[in-house]
Length: 139
Ligand code: THU
Image 1 (spheres, rainbow, N blue to C red):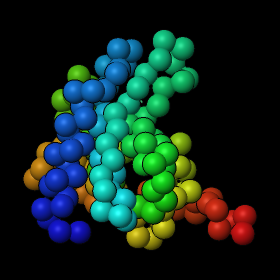
Image 2: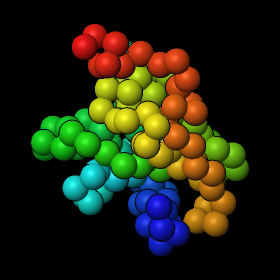
Image 3: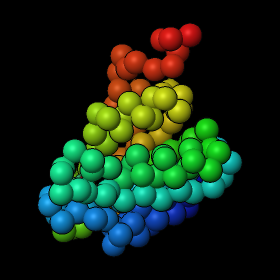
Image 4: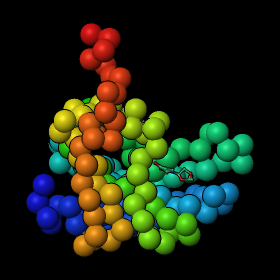
C-alpha cells in the first residue's frame, strides 16, 4: 500500500473516534475499511447498557460496506484508546477477526494498527488469525 493511502486510512479511523458511543468502557475505537472498489467505509464502536449487544468499530465498518453490496476488501485501519487517547495499538478482537475471515483473503488483507499517521504497523489477517476457520473450510 502506498504511504499516502495508509495515512488517509489512519486519518479516517481517527476521525471516527468522535462518533464512538462508549459510555461504559470509555474506550473509543475508530476504523476505516478500504474495499477493493476503492471506496472507504468508516466505523466506530457502539456500546449498549446490556453490554453484549455492543458492536466493535471494525464490524460497524464491515457491516456498513456489506450492506451496500461490497464483498471484497483490501485493508482496514483500527485505532483506539481510553477516552479516545491513542497510546497503544488496539488490535481487532477475535469476533472481528472472524468476520474478516468471512470476506477477506487472509494472506492479502492488511490490518493497519496505528497510534498516529506516522506510527503504525501492518499485519496480514493471516498473521493475526493463524489456523483460522473460514468459508474455504465448508467448500
Ligand atoms: N472494541 C472495538 O471496537 N474493537 C475491537 O477490536 C476491540 C474492542 C470496543 C468494544 C467496546 O466498546 C470497547 O472497545 C471495549 O472493549
